[in-house]
Amino acid sequence: MYYRLKSHCALIEGAARGAIYDFRSGKVLSVNRGAVELLTACQQAPLDTLLDLQDPAVRPYLTFLDTLARRNLGSYYALNPPAAASQSEYVPAATLDFLWLEITSCCNNRCLHCYTASSPALQQGCVPHERWLSLISEAREQGATALQLIGGEPLLYPKWRELIGKAAEEAYDYIEIFTNATLIDEDCIRFFKHHNLYLATTIYAASADIHDRVTGNQGSFDKTMTAIKKILAAGIPLRIASILMKANETEAQNIIQLCRELGLPDTVPDVIRPTGRGDDDGLLPRHYHRPPVRPPFYTDRDSFRLAHFSHSCLSGKIAITADGDVLPCIFARDRIAGNILNRPLREVLSGAVLQETWNTTKDAIIKCRDCEYRYACSDCRPLAQSTDPDKRWCAPSPYCDYNPYTGQWN
Ligand SMILES: C[S@@+](CC[C@H](N)C(=O)[O-])C[C@H]1O[C@@H](n2cnc3c(N)ncnc32)[C@H](O)[C@@H]1O
Ligand code: SF4
Ligand code: SF4
Image (cartoon, rainbow, N blue to C red; front, side, top):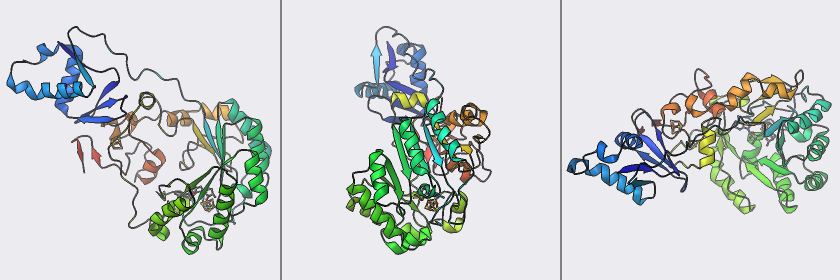
C-alpha cells in the first residue's frame, strides 16, 4: 500500500517543522518533523515497508494519514502512483510591469516623515521633459502596463498633463496619480475623468489640526478633503493611504471611520518607514505597531510557483526618481540600478542590480530560507533592509517572531 499527498498539495520542509500547501482551499497547514519525515518517506517506499501496520505504536502515524485523507489532502493507493509533476517548475524571467515616476522632488507640503524629503524648498529635479516622454514609450515597449505619477507633489510638475496624455497614447492599462490633493481644481477633475485616471491620496487624521501638523501646511486638510469629495462626486476611482507616526498615532480608528463615511474601503494604516525625513526615531509611534507576521498563511499554485523564482512584491517594478535614478521601489532609495539620463531603460532593466532584486526569493533571506512558510509569506525587502542594523539586503523581517529552528512563535 502506498500513500501520497494529493496533486493539489505540496509539502515544504522547514528547519524544525513542515507545511502542507493546499492549492485547492488556499490553506497552509503546519505539520511536525515526524509528519514531514513520514510523508517524505512515503514518496520512496510502500507504507507497509515503512511502518509495521499491526504495531499499536504506529497508530498515531496512521491516524495522521487518515486525517489528511479525510481532509482530501492525501490518499492511499494499492499500486505505486505515478510521480506527481513538480509544483515549482521553471517560470520565465520577470519583465517590467509597473513603474513609479517621481516627476518632481518639489512639494507644497513638508510632511514630517517624507521619504523623499520633499518640501517647497526643493527643485523640480533634472530629468528633461522630453526624457520623461520617451521613457513612458520605452517602458511600454519593455512590457510595462501600469504607471503612477508621484513625487514630491506630481501636480507641481508644470507639464504633468502631457505625461498623462503620453501614457494614454501608449495605451497603459492603469494610470494613477498619487497626489496630496491640495492643488486639485475643477479643471483637474475634468482631465482625470477624461483620461480614466486612478487617484491616490493621503489622510493623516480625521481633523485639520493633526493632519496639518503632519503636513506642515496649514489649510492642507481642508483642501485635501474638498478635493476628495469632488473626486468621489465625479466617480473617479480613489485610493486612500494613511501613514502613522507619533504625531497622529491616535488617529488610526478615526481615519478608518472617516473613510467609511466617505464610502471608501477601509484603509489599513501603515507605520512610517526609516527613509528620508522618516529616518528619525523621534517620529516613531509609541503605541501603534505594524501588525506582526502571523499565520494563517494563504497560497495558490501560481504565487507558490512564482515565489520559487522571483520576489513576490518587487518583481517587475521600478521607480524612477526626479534625478533619473532607477530604483526597485520608492522605499529602496540606496539601491540604484542605473540612471536613465545616460542609458536606455532596456540596459538598466537587464543590469545586475535589478535582476538580482527581482529574483530575490525567500530562499535567499536569512531565517526565511529555513522556514516552511517561505513560499506563502509576504515580504518587504526595503523595510527589512532599512531596519537592519547592518543594512543587509537579505536581512530577516523585523516584524516576524517565528523561529523556524525551534518551530515556535515567540
Ligand atoms: C511621497 S508621497 C507622494 C505623493 C503625494 N505627495 C502624497 O503625499 O500623497 C506618497 C506616499 O508616501 C508616504 N510616505 C512618505 N514618507 C514616508 C515614510 N517615511 N514612510 C512611509 N510612507 C511615507 C506619504 O505619506 C504618501 O502617502
Ligand atoms: S509625503 Fe507627499 S505631500 Fe508630504 S512632503 Fe512628501 S511628497 Fe509632499
Ligand atoms: S517572515 Fe520568514 S521566518 Fe517569518 S513566517 Fe515569513 S517566511 Fe517564515
